[in-house]
Length: 125
Image (cartoon, rainbow, N blue to C red; front, side, top):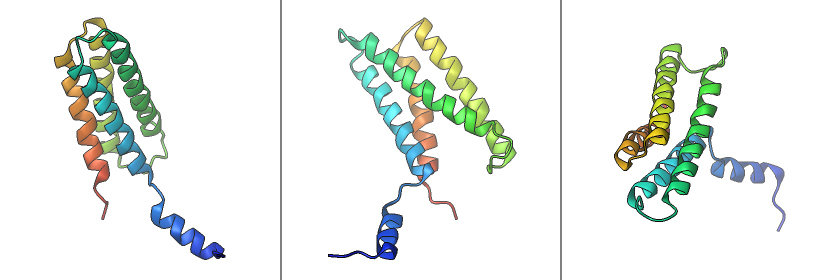
């Protein structure tokens, strides 16, 4: 069956994932990885999984920092500044966990990721 280019585009547009959805999914994935570390803290490979989860989360937040630092970013400046401050907290907490690991220290990172993902999941007006 032949699909016209217009129909193919319209179908693709309906299933296209937005940047907000991708960012939310990435944040939730990192939150799940960190939560898994909390739940399996005493298992033999937990240190490796913790390091990988923290590295993934740091990469994601570094991407956010880079994007939010652009002068031509469309987000309002005050919101960008607040998110950049939050990203600095994420950086500090990550270093604290690496220096002295503890499952309770991960909770802040998990909650931040989940809350930001929830905000990104809301459809803007």
